[in-house]
Length: 318
Ligand code: J7C
Image 1 (cartoon, rainbow, N blue to C red):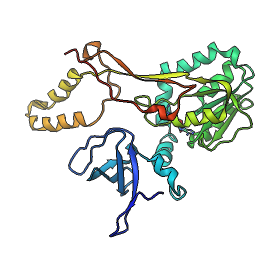
Image 2 (tube, protein in one colour; image 1 turned 135 degrees about the vertical axis):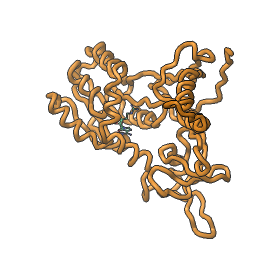
Image 3 (cartoon, rainbow, N blue to C red; image 1 turned 30 degrees about the vertical axis):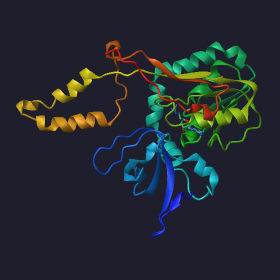
Image 4 (tube, helix red, strand yellow; image 1 turned 45 degrees about the horizontal axis):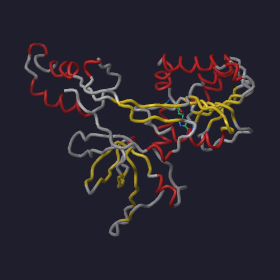
């Protein structure tokens, strides 16, 4: 991989990475970072935690919060090492069932794709479709079962593709669906497609950064006038509180089994604020401002360079 800087003394090779997401340090040895920060990675002592430098401060950061600086990548020799987030850790995590189970169990997500395919089955007739990042192949199977496309190219980089092939056969769709195991950036098709469908949306819409692969596939493989599903995407944010959830976490340490555990409350508080809360349902009364649409993407025209989001301010209600 590329050399960002070499320390004259020991010849240490530093690589430049960009933070994909915020991380709050938990303890003296960790380093807080914000999405978009540029860091120099000094060492990768484990696959999960790297020793990195930000503005002269050094500490451990989670490797899965970093991606290689693309500008740096294109500058020099990129052949020697692979991006660990993109390849090993990222595609590795999609080689097991955990995330696929989570996605398939998300009924509103899966049903939305099924409904779109059903509602547009007439226009899919004799059309070529690419399902990018097909996972277990659910969207490809919907296309083959609910419409009559001429071909469905189901592209999946993780090892799940081997099972997807079996699922396609098991459901009698092998004449229509071709499973291609590989990254969207590497695959070759015999034809351009009429429809590019993908379920690429991550946490806060952009996390995982799969969108870039989708745009690349669109520009390379979607024929002129072809259709993108989804055709648009938006991220709406609203500042909120989680008072009752927070109180519940703190109260636990007041007197478990009749004993005074309050010295643990500061630690509980620190831990509470260290990690984002996933899947916590908020009430309307928890909102502290009106929702604000911070990103709105037109998938037919979007360019990677449009993805810079400026600063947003939320006038608070209280
Ligand atoms: N090429 C092929 N498959 C990909 C790519 C890519 N560039 N990027 C992600 N995937 C697959 C990944 O292995 C997983 O099965 C799915 O797409 C990610 C879906 N993630 C999501 N948040 N919806």
